[in-house]
Length: 399
Image 1: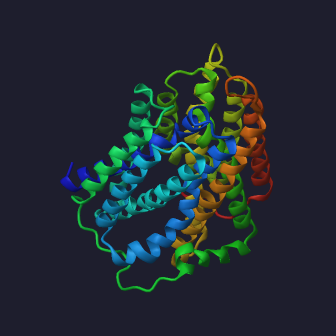
Image 2: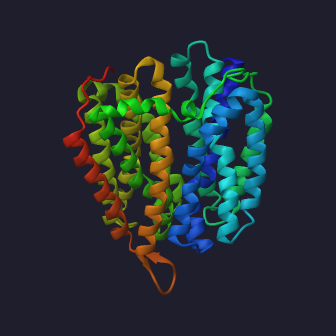
Image 3: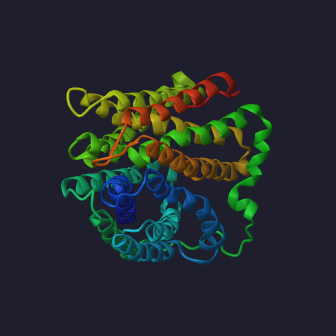
C-alpha cells in the first residue's frame, strides 16, 4: 500500500469513526438519560439533515474557492472536537440542540471534502477509490464496537470518544497531501451550488416520480437512524450498538453483489427490492422480541445493505444516466439535497412525533414499539406501490 493510499485510508477510517461513535446511540442517551421527548430526539437527528442542506453553500462558495482541502478539514475537525466536548456537558434541550447544529455544520461538509481530497490524489479514481472508501465503513463498525463494549451508549462519553477522534483527524489532516481549492479563481453561483440546472429533468414524468419517491422513502428511513438503538436497548438486547454493525457488514456484501443483481433486475427492480426490504425490516422489528424471536431483529438489521445500497446507489446511477454530461454533477447535487437534506429533515420530525404518540406514560420510559414500527412499514409499502405503478425508466441500466 502506497503512503498516500495509507493516509487516505486512515482519513476515511477516522471520518466515519467520528460519526458512528455518537450518531447510532445518541437516541438512547437523549430518551433514557436526558429524558428528552421523541420530538426533541428527532429534532437532534434532524441537525445532520439541516447541515446537509447548508454544507453545499459552504463547500461551493467558500471551501472550494479559497482554502486547501486538507487545511479546511483540519480546521473543521478541530473546531468540531471542541463542540463535541461542549455538547457532552449539556443536559437542557435548547443549548444541546443549538450546539449540535453548530457541530453538524462543521462535520457534514467534511464528508464531501474527504471524498474530494481522495479523488484529487488518485490517478484512476474508479479503480482506487473502492479500495479506500471501505475503510470508512470499517471505521463506523469499529466505533459501534467501542461504544458497545465500553457500555457508554447511555452516557455522554460517546461524544467525548467522538471528540478525541475528531481532534486526531484534525491534526492528521495537516499531514495529508496538499490539495488546492478545486475552484480557485472561478465564479460560482447559488444555482450551481444547489444543482438547480437539474430541474429541467423534472419535465420527464418518471424522473419527477423518482425525485418525489426518493424524498418520501427518506421519511421511514429516519426511523431506523434515530430510534433503532433506543428500541433495541429498551427491548433488552445487549451490546445493541455492536449488533447494529450487522447493517454495515451487509452494506459491504451488497456492494460486492450489486453488479450481478443490476444485470438481472435493472434500476427499477433494485429500487423496488430495496423498498420491499424496508417494509419487511420494520415488520420484523414490530413483531420480534429479545427472547426466542430475537432472530427477527438480526435479520432486520442485516437488511440494511439491501435497503440502503440498492436504493441510493441505484438512484445515483439512474441520475447519471438521465442527466446530460454538462449537468450530471448538478443533478447528483440536487438529488442529494432532496434526500439527505429535505427528506431526512422531514423524516426526523415525523419519526419523533410518532415515537411521542406511542410513549407509555407512568413508570420507567417505555414505548409501544409494535405500533411505532408499523408506521414506517406502511410508509415504505405506499412508496413501493407509487414506484411500481408510476416509475418507468426508459433506459435499461448498464452493469
